[in-house]
Structure formats: structure tokens, C-alpha cells
Length: 410
Image (cartoon, rainbow, N blue to C red; front, side, top):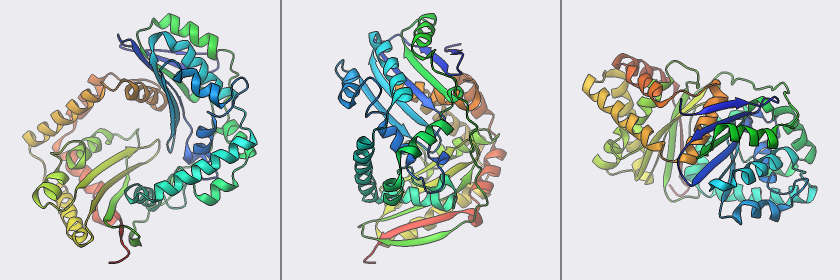
């Protein structure tokens, strides 16, 4: 086994992946994100992530930021639909310093009113900046199609109105209801002895009181496909099409991951890139993505092109999807797709910060971490018939939603 896991008495799990390097990376991953917000509290999880860096019982904002930056380390955080993550990269000798800061931020933040108001203004600027980027905004609006009237369909940043109305009580209530110690993982990758890491984590996190509130994470309801065009003050047209997809626990997850990579994943040799960009030259950016979540998933295709070329681009995308629904892949073609995907996964392991976050997420999601060989074996077991079946389910034209942003002048 190339990693070790230890569970503290309060439920917090400690993960170490040894790696012989003078640089180490660490994260604390919390199984709580924007989908756990109550109606009308959009943006709350993201606001909390910002405020964790503002003031704690023993540090002010400057002391928090300088704690790692003064030793040349990098500290950051992000919020997703289902997770909140704080992470850091640093020289090996600063592990205790980094983990001590994680503990202070997550368990001893004070959320003073003056900082709440200041950070709201920062987030309002962030929302405005985000809306100025149609390639980003369209993705969020599209997720609203897939998960209408559900927290998964709302913007992680919230809206100007919802953020303005969030209170300190909302923050404290959210944390007490969603920050379970048995749904937190402290992940470390670096040149360390596991017993010493356990001892260090017992010292830093061992006295934290176990907290296991009953979370109320509702599964999305019925999905109704939608097709919509919206005029915006933009110069280029943007489009997203897609469907709900498989969860992290679905038996066909690896098959759709493989199919997505073949269709519009990393690299210039994807089917969509070769057909739409290279052959027809009508889209600079075209890509697909599959995001599996705890109880559902999202598949989408994004492209941006000139307004007069968008309809042709959409027809060409539908043509590629139809091929995958109607023509079974050949054995050699599928084998090459597997080789490409497996190679990309292996190369991604070289990003060690992303790796430890990914391993921590696996521990939260499944309670264990499979070695790469197990994942590769699952990918290699995917058959031509499975690919055809998945394509017919996920790419069913009657189930595809489409959202187009087009210039207001057209």
C-alpha cells in the first residue's frame, strides 16, 4: 500500500502518502459545500470559506496570511457543490506549522461582523467579474437547467441579493449543521514517517470535540430537458448542451469517464476537437466534461464560436453524438482510447497537490483509496457494448438540454 490512514477518536481521518521530495502538500477536506445550503442562503458555504482566513481566536488576518507566506509557502482554499477544501504547499520542515494553521482556521474562526461585511463586498465584486465571463456564467446557468429548484442548480458564489442577506447566525448555523468531524480528512503528501504524522495530528487535532450533526442532503428531483437561447452583451456565441449523468457510486462511472475523454476530454485528438475545430475550423474551444457527484452527476459539452457559425457547430456536435449512439466502437479504437485515458491519469499523478486532494476525496467518498492499478483495471474492463449503451442513455437527444448565449445584436 502506497498510503496510510489513521482515524482520530473524534472521527477526523489522517491520510499520508509518502513522497521523497523537499516540498510537501497538505489539505483539510470537508464534506460540505453549496448543495448543503438552505433555500435563500445561496453563497453561504463560499462566504464561510472566505471568512476562515479573516480572524481566529489567536490570529488576525495579517497573522493568518503571514503564517505560511513568510516561509515561502502557498495557502489557498476553494468551495465546490459538495466540498470545502483548504490546502497548502510548503517545505517539508513546516508541516506542523501548516497543520496548526488548518486547525485554527476550521475550528477557531470568529467571523466578526466587520469582516463579514467587508468580505461580502469582495464576493459581490467576484460575482460581477464572473458574470463578465460568459464562458463561465453559461456553465452555471446550464446547471440550473439540470437541477432546477435544487441547491445543485444554484451558483456556488450565490447572487448579489442572497449574499447581501447572509448573517453571522447563518454562518454559525451552517457550520454546526454540516461540519462533521467524521467527514473531514487531513491529507499529507511528503517525506514523513507515518507514526510521527499521527503523533503530530493527535497533538493538533486530537482535542477537537467530535461533531456529528445529522445532515439533510436532498437528492435532486425530476429532470425536464430545456432548450433556450439568451441574448447577451457579448461578441461571441457560447453554448452548453448536456444531461444528468452517473454518481460516483454508479457501475458505469468509469465507462462514462472513458467516453467523455474520447469525445471531448484532454488533448487535441478528441472527437469533438478534430471534427469541429480541426476539420471545420468553427470553434476555438470545444470540450466535454463529466462530473460525478455523491448521488447524481453532470455531463456537458461547451463551445464558443462566431454567432453565424453556432447553428452549424451544434448540428456537428449532434452528428458526433449520433455516431456514438449508433455505431459500436471497434476493439482497436476502444483500446487506443483506453491507452490514452490511462496515460493521462498517470501523468496527472505528477501534480502532487491535486493528487493528495483527490486521494482525500476518495477517502471521504468511498471510505478507502484504490491503487491506480484497480482504476486502470476497471477502465480496461469497459466493453464496446457498454460504451454504446452509455452513449444511448446519456446522449439521448430527447434528454439533452441546450443553452445558448448569443450577441444581443444578432
